[in-house]
Image 1 (cartoon, rainbow, N blue to C red):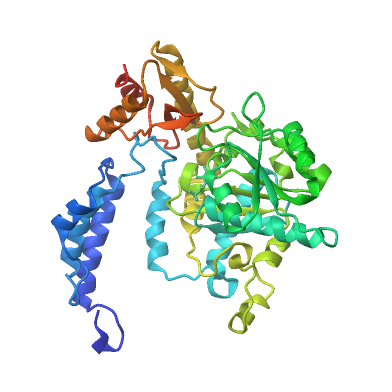
Image 2: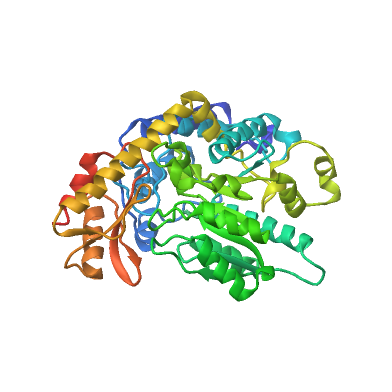
Amino acid sequence: MNPASGYSRNTHQELTDLLDAVTEYAERRIRMLPPLDRPRTQEDLDAALGRTVTPGGIGGSEAMRVFVDELAPACLSTDHPRYLSFIPCAPSDAAVVFDLVVGASSIYAGSWLEGAGAVWAENQALRWIADLAGLPERAGGVFVPGGTVGNLSALVTARATARRQARAGVRPWRVAATAGAHSSVASAAEVMDAELVGVVGDADWRLSGPALRATLEAHGPETFFAVVATAGTTNFGIVDDLASVAQVCEEYGLWLHVDGAYGGAGLAAPSVRDRYAGVERCDSFIVDPHKWLFAPFDCCALLYRDPALARAAHTQRAGYLDVLTEAPEWNPTDYAVGLTRRARGLPFWFSLAVNGTDAYTAAVERTLEVARFAEAEVVRREHLELVRARDLSVIVFRRLGWGADDYHAWSDRLLDEQLGFVVPTAHDGETLARFAVVNPATTEDDIRAVLDTMS
Ligand SMILES: *Cc1c(COP(=O)(O)O)cnc(C)c1O
């Protein structure tokens, strides 16, 4: 930095050196087969690096060295083909490359006034998702950091709407969801001081209309402001019975939010599209392009059937914001919790524009094909047992004869040997193995290699 120049930027030579170092590294990382890498302890990093934030600065080449040699290898590569834990993130080349452009561009994407071009493009990407879900022309929303903020923002809108429409003296405070709903739904309820009421899943572990109706009747339907259905649970990839749930929501005049943070991407895949029947009747919907739609972190598409209801719930008002809030244009910030926002939908938009939506369909189908293979291999191998038939691209299975310690030791060994990152999950108190396949670079050979380590 060179404050003496009156403009706090680096000198010409410093900038050239920084650009060389950063672009060289970025290009190398983008082109390579990523290493899996491994975490290091706080003590280990402290000992190796000491203080990196100092009054005088350590300089560009040293800071880059610290990152390249020490910090980056202490971060797992979620785009490694054998990173099968949680929900991986495997962005397309176009999306990753364009993320660099977004970083270089200082775009404020909260308002149309400041970020019209970015907002326009983000809205086209949102429109593609709205069309996949069968939402009407007036549907719209915003890209938020993740499913957690997406679920919270949708539920805040649902409650504001329900309370405005409720009979005098009635202030609905409950939200209904199954046990399979993501932890962020419970977290949203906690933040909102709302009560989350669990609905018993059906024989196939899905949220369905009859069980929902029974729960609503048991607690009093007028005490609820929303129902959360999941289109692809995180642990098992289960898609709720959206049509029967939507039917009950319509009968009671209840807001239906569909959480497709992980599984919403399956809407692009004809082979599983019929599982989502009824999604077009939702009031709000989320999908995380950073999960199964090949965008970099952090990116969740939040859509509303009637965006005006979200605006009414979320628009922040202040004298210094009047020039924005009194304008008729689309201000993304009005549709969710949060004011300042990065144009985080742009890498996703760029990749959609570059590759075309057919490429997305093909890529999602490819991951489903590999998941289908994994399921068949589990069924075929005698010492393995499928826990539940697969809906999407998550497979949960047990290794017969193993206890919790065996799964954890196996998982640690895989990472130690840099063979894969596959952490166990749990269901009903039982430790189990789980694969989430969302990376089109994950092959049948990768699945076979990991399963071979379980014999
Ligand atoms: C991942 C996930 C979330 C939370 O999304 P974040 O982007 O991690 O905040 C919510 N719901 C479901 C179903 C998920 O899989």
